[in-house]
Structure formats: structure tokens, C-alpha cells
Image (cartoon, rainbow, N blue to C red; front, side):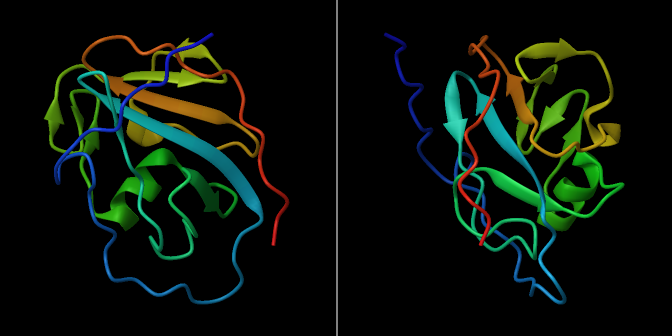
Length: 134
């Protein structure tokens, strides 16, 4: 049985959402995003504009969006060597497979499970069971 990864403690692991309103229709396309630093979970907050509705990591987006677009809307840092306030090589996994790209340019594709890590390896999930859209 897998051992759950603990949630990080403190503001670095619980970054706030900017005060953005969701204007217009909520996009239907979704990915699930998981973030890890130093072997701990980083929580993705609710209400990052139209991108997030709850703190589950489900990110809604418009066609043509990239991971960099999401992080810009969130007003958080993302680069090949930085994830939020955590420095170090950023590893990216799409549906359990490692991808070697600049994370900012990673195109979002509906139904994907995306995992970003800095620090020790955390075994990435290969899929996510999305709840029904509402």
C-alpha cells in the first residue's frame, strides 16, 4: 500500500491565491496538477481566477493555455530551476512519464495528470479520477 506524501507546513507550502475574479464562462478543459518540494505537498489554493474552484489541484483552462499561463495568473514563480519559492531543478511528469521541457511552455491537455517536483523524488501518479463537471 502506498504511503501518502505529507503536506508541507508554513506559507511556502500554502501559497495564497491572488484576488482575481472569474469573469465569463468557466472553461471545461481540466488537468490535475500536483506540486512537491523537499518531499512535501504544496497546496494549490481555491479561486485563482477561473483556473481553480477548490483546493484539489484541478485546474481549468482555455484551449492553448500553458503551465506558465497558470503560474502567471497565480502570480507565482516557475522556471526550469524554480517552483514557487523553492530553488532547484524542476522535474515534470505528464501522466507518470518524465518530460524534459521548460515547464512554462508545457501545453495543457485535458485529462492530464501533471506533477512538478523540486528536491527528492516523489513517485508521480499516472492518472486522476476527475469529479463530474459542474
